[in-house]
Image 1 (cartoon, helix red, strand yellow):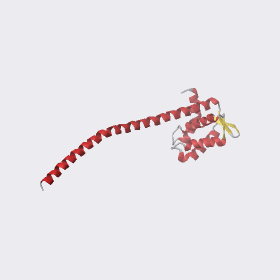
Image 2 (cartoon, helix red, strand yellow):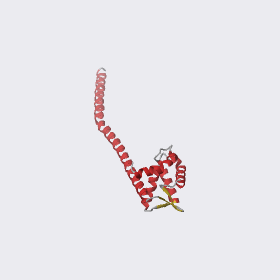
Image 3 (cartoon, rainbow, N blue to C red):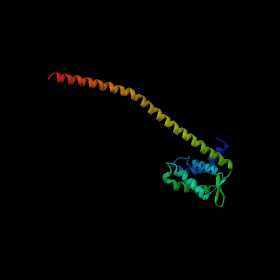
Image 4 (spheres, rainbow, N blue to C red):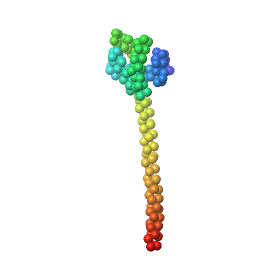
Length: 168
């Protein structure tokens, strides 16, 4: 890992225990999300209310965290306030990353993560499509086989019917 990665992981390592039951990437993913929201807004800092909203919306969007989104966001916000380092209070009601480099790097990581997630979804969809296409391609041969069996059964029935009616 790069020195930048080592710094981020060192700063976030204590927060991982807040999310141990959901996986240790939760704190990192949330920080990336906040960094991206700040980058997209063009702001260097973020107000307390906007920070709370961003953190909560991040957890609400996570199917594994939705049920505890309020508790998780409150815990992470409290942790950030009491453990300044990577991200901390800039002014009375404003928070920022200690250096713009961290914000930009984490925002970029969020974009890259989203890209790879979308690629994974596309691969699964392509696999399902290929499987369905294969089933569709097999259907005509199964249909021909069923039609052949039906014709044979009809022929046998006709033969039986002809035999029954001729004996009368």
